[in-house]
Length: 388
Image (cartoon, rainbow, N blue to C red; front, side, top):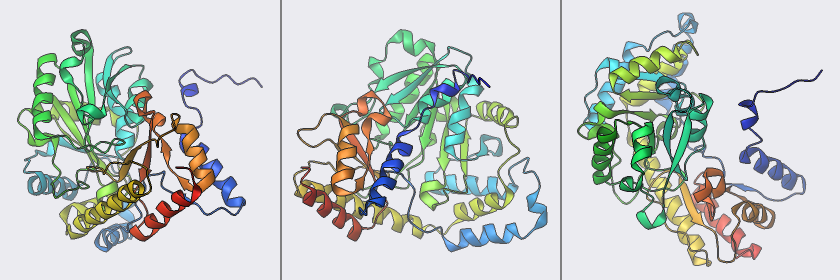
């Protein structure tokens, strides 16, 4: 039987993580010691009070029904959390849950875009920023993020014709993969830009609780006019180690939330109720574990970046996120080739920057998913490999 697949399905080839995993398994079979810093899956444990809330809710047979709406306790928890954490007041109809930000990004464009509508996405940027709009046949135009501008977009350099055509713009700070944090002045400029050209802003705020140097992460919605022009995705995955539970929120402009909710009712029947109860418990606190976790990530960041600098690889400290964005060592120009050579010689797995866009070439991304002692071992393995 001759099976012909759709053009859209053919967009998705074996991803870099599948390629890296295949190489990893080959090296393990050879007896090689492996240090996997590729995937951003937190190694911290989920807090006991969150697990307890999920467990208790899972004992109730009524909680296995379709979750057609978000439970009132969850909406209240989001409202209280945003007020306490970001000083942002929210109405109930400005909040909706999603099965993780990845799923939200995949479907958000369906709310706003017709085929060939323009969406602005960062380069380098997380792949789903491009893939989501492409799924509904929108046209993505990438705006560049350069080290020389602290990986912030130069909004005044986006061509006016492009800005006028854009339906929405994806913004992500603290930024994966470039590990940069945006100053308040950027958000003020961004909101003015969105108003001028009537562009909806989608702010991916997955890492606001992982920021270094004594700074406090914020929310796009803290700034005047933000709710007028856009929405924010807030995720429980990295802050509360709730990754497998898949729980995030779209928050902001109520008209957009209402339409996005209507679209998503055609896709699923809501987040599993025990997961909602666990999310409410997370947002209600306590939060000391989130703060301790941030301090531990910062120690890991310093151990990896400082350690690599000590052996001759000039890697700057990250400003935030659970990643390190490292320029290739001297003498290397191809990130894919370097990653494979690094894995072969040292057992250390990272992700080629080219996986995040053309401007990611020349970099690799490490995930801070090992403790400081293990990171020191990783640095020594890289030194001993002779790759530098």
